[in-house]
Image 1 (tube, rainbow, N blue to C red):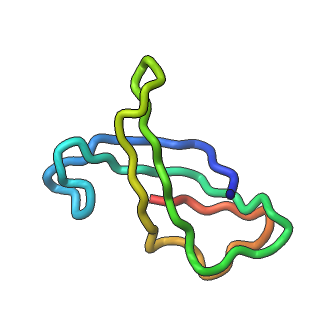
Image 2: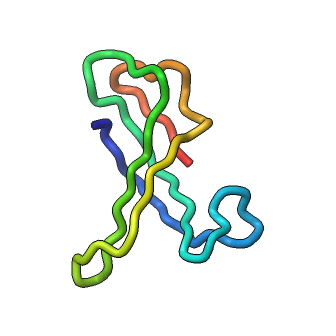
Length: 80
């Protein structure tokens, strides 16, 4: 699992190309390769949403088209 930080989750709107369903969200997160080797082949996003009581209320899996071909150890990029 890669390191993550600076996560923002915004409600999808009808104008979004991807997140236009009711109860959909746009995710933006800083991903850091905290391994000792370069990462190649893409990144899979897996998100679990919790309510204020800690109960799971949703989630999803996705892929990004802006991931670099190779992410060297210690480097970061922004997933959207």
